[in-house]
Image 1: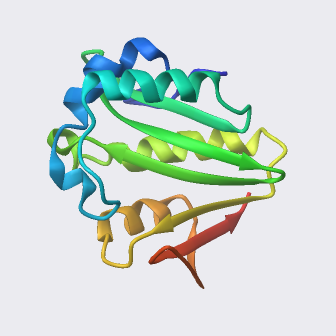
Image 2: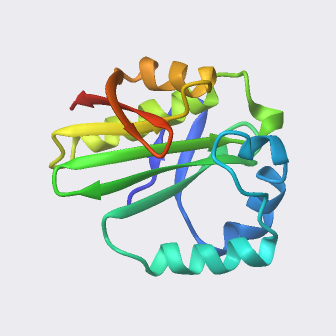
Length: 157
């Protein structure tokens, strides 16, 4: 899987070794306000990352690394099914409000444009204004379709 570069960020293919640092990045319970669940421990993330790294070819995951100091600050993912890529992104609470999720997602969409993908989608809770702003910034638009209490956003590639 490719490393993806952006002006302030590098998207690194997920590795099991990222679990310890990502457990700290994702430790704020507020990150789960819209998606449910609770923060995972480093061991739980390590187990999850082992499955993700060994998982299906269509499940692509990257950690977001800041160029300035090498810190990991979140992740992006693309689940590819036929010619559709479903995107997701999370940036840790201390790094929110800096446009990092938008920059990372834009870089991911740029990578997707080089693949055999026709449509990108994301499912966003209707009250999650920050994620809606990220989706809009990469050209996604809300549809009238819902899944598990979230609005389906989509765009052609």
